[in-house]
Length: 178
Image 1 (cartoon, rainbow, N blue to C red):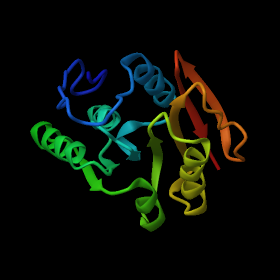
Image 2: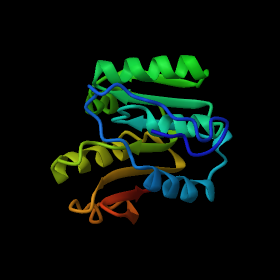
Image 3: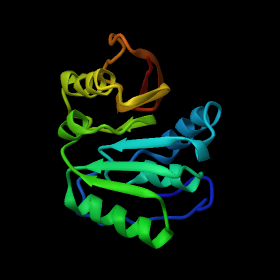
């Protein structure tokens, strides 16, 4: 895994092999951040990274200057790896070891961007439940965006808050807004 831009540009991070993760590819991640770079000043936003896994997306935001990042995952090994990496690089990542759905139901945190990268084998209803929770709980600031990464075989375009999709190979980023 590589940090693409910012303070830690080109920095390689090696996650333990035993983590149950599928990190976002460098090509897809670079494309996503090119889109976000045209809309946001990274040093003035807050981010929630759901199903954070290795923390790949959180590190990218932190390297680009984001000062408030919440990384949520249910796997202890993932959270431990992120905590160790954040400490080593002095990154402002706050971790929560929690089931994402339970976290979304209970949290009062609001952010500018919520990124969700659930397992690709989730059913469509499981993806849509994330979207519904984010919008019914008002977890985004007014101009905020929810981005859900999923495979090209999942279609989330029918949700009322769906804005657009960006496709990169087998990866799709679905964008949702108020």
